[in-house]
Each structure stands twice: as structure tokens, then as C-alpha cells.
Image (cartoon, rainbow, N blue to C red; front, side, top):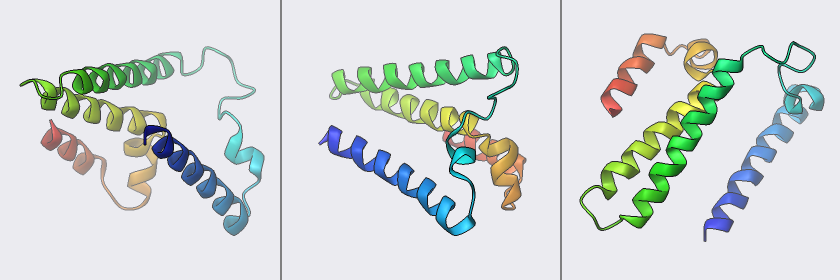
Length: 118
């Protein structure tokens, strides 16, 4: 079941990349290369480390939630893992900084949504 979900997510991500390449005529290299390729290695060091910490925190919370599924803190850990994962994805893909404001969602509204989730 878990492997199937992972494969489905990977296939969906590859499908999105292929769709953007085909429909928007974006070069494949633009979609697959590291955005900092050719730049100094230390550029974005703290941000990248933060993304790793978010991902590690989410993984630990999900693991603990699965072990403590029936315990009182299991749901809390599941929520913490979900929030950490959302913040990780947001940080990795610059959602609240760049992407969502482009589609008309103000950054303040995103912060309010995160506060509501907490």
C-alpha cells in the first residue's frame, strides 16, 4: 500500500513535469536542473538546511504517530507531522514567497491559514 502511494506520487510529479514541458514548451532542463546550478555552493545554505530540518521533523512525527497510533499523543504527532510536511513543501517550492501571490493569494492570508492550522 505504502509503495503504491509513493509510486503514484512519483508518477504524478513526473506527469506534471511532462505536461508543463509539452503544453507550455518549457525546456526539460529548466524543469529538472537544480535552480542554483552554476551558482556558489553556499548560496541558500541556511534555507536548504531548514528544508532538511522540516523534512526530518515530519518524518519523525509520522513514525512516532504510527507507533503510537492508539495512544493519546498519536493524533497530535500526526498533526505535527502534517504541519511540518506542509511547511517543508512551502519552503522548498517558495509557495508563500513567490507562487501563491502570483495566483492572487496574499502572503498574509497564507500566514493566517498556517496560524489556523497550528
